[in-house]
Length: 289
Image 1 (cartoon, rainbow, N blue to C red):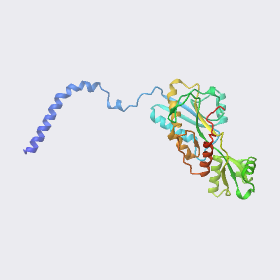
Image 2: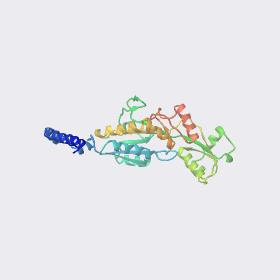
Image 3: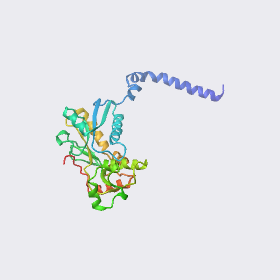
Image 4: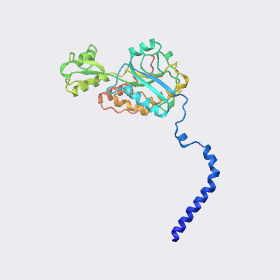
């Protein structure tokens, strides 16, 4: 046998002897220790079950869905907390009112300004913009805006006169090419732009004209939400009012309400409209005014 083979055999023999000597000493400890499967098991949550969330719709974004944005972060919460599920529903104000009249109410609610009273919501204290907020019953999520839509070839007035004219007409009349101008929200402008791109509308122009908006969406927690659900409800609201989630709102044409978010808009008229509103602090953060 060569010297190399002798050396390898000696090392292997020594290792085997060492294993035989040491294994009994640690066997009892290993038998009492947690198994590999135990370590892989998710941590036990203080609550297991469903947390309900309504997104009550008064206005829609320029494109896409704010409800889908909420669902994205609800799913992220489910991945963080094993056995905790978030049921997100987008419903109209009429449907939300009907359910409330029947005694039904979600744990978390996204709602437009003025839809709820303070007494219906729990007082919260949530980290926002890097500072501890004061106690609040709602936090502002997002805002839309009103825009002036007009057919340049079909109107002979401009400025204040054009705005006054536009107030007389509905978006549906403008969409049907029955009137020369109208006032519409961001979704209306988006719908018209998509019709124009498809060759189903005449050329029109869009201008921002207001430095304030009532189209603001808020989030809150029901005063009747069970105590064991509260940490998860608060965590979701903290998540959707945080800088990262808020920054994504510009991709669907909404204005984030976290001042630290840096929105980027594809549509220059939206950038101009929201800049006007932000400069004058025209998107109120009080849901109950």
